[in-house]
Image (cartoon, rainbow, N blue to C red; front, side, top):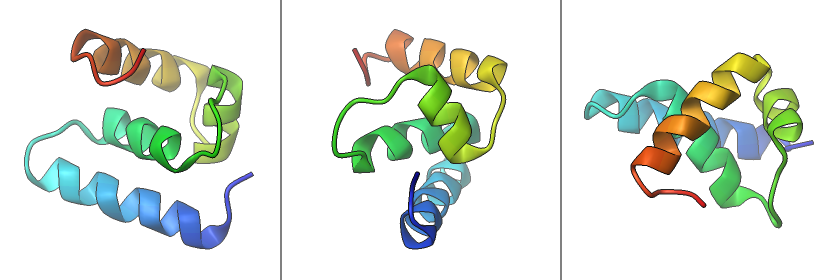
Length: 70
């Protein structure tokens, strides 16, 4: 589980990305992956960000299309 500081960092960057036109949910997922020490499963991302599995799926689909994750 992510610390409160890490969650604040993730949400702050996601808000910044959203302010310049990047969709917020993909931004949150991307930042969560970037600060993780190792890869994360979809369930871990959903639990960490307190979002649904469907939200993770949609966000990761977008990130894959944009070649930002593998």
